[in-house]
Length: 276
Image (cartoon, rainbow, N blue to C red; front, side, top):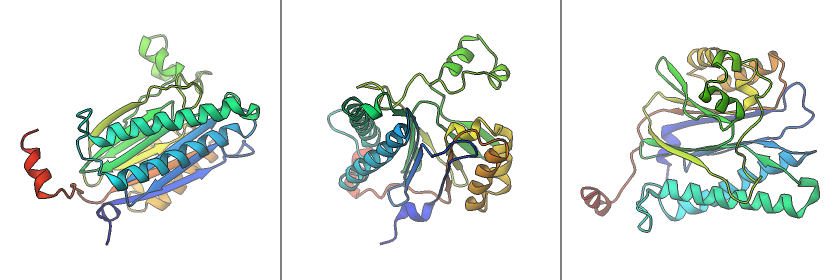
C-alpha cells in the first residue's frame, strides 16, 4: 500500500562536517512513511557530541516508529486528554534524555555530553514541532520566511531582555551557549507546539552551523529559487555555509508539503469528533 504521507511530503536530509571540524557531531533522521524528521547537534568532549546526537536520533526514531505503528498520532489520549502525538513525543524525548544522561554518568569518556534536538511530526494537515537548544525549524510559506522555533540560548535570553539588539546578536561571542540540552541533566523541558500546514509550505530544520554562517535572507532566497528541486536546495545551503567559512558541522532537513494529508479516520472516530 502506498503511504499517504509518502505522496504528500518530499523530504531531503543532508549533513556535512564543514570546513574546520575534524568530525561530524550532527545527526539527522527521516521517516517519510510516518512523516517525522529529527535533527540533533551534539556537544561534549572528543567524540562525545557525536555519541549524544547519534543516540538521540537512533533512540527517539525507534521509539516513535514503534509508538505510531501501534497508535495513530491524531488519536486523543484518554488519560491526559491530549492528542497522542504531543504526549508520545514528550514521553519519548524524556526517555531518550535519561538514556543519554545515564550513559554520560556511567562512562567517563562521555561525561558532560549532550545534544540539541529539533523534531517535526507531520500528520492530519498539521505539524507538531518539539525542540531543545538552538537547532531551528523555519517555514517558507509563499513570500514569508520565519523561524518557528525560538532558541534556548543565552543569546536569545539577552535579546528578549533587551540587553542587546538582534543586529548586535549577529556579532556576539555567545552564539553557542545553550540554556537547554538533551542528556545533560536527568530531566529536561521540551518545548512543543502544533501548527497547521498548507500545500506548498517548505520546512527547514537546521543546526546552527547553517544559520550562524548564512543570513536568513540568503536562506529564504535559496529556498524560493530552488523550491522545485529540494535535493539541489539542500546541497546549495550546505555549500553556502562552507563557502562562508564552514566553522561548524552543518545539517539541514527540508520537508515540502506537496498536497493535503488529512487523517484516514474510521467512521467511529469521525462521529466522536463531533463531541469534542
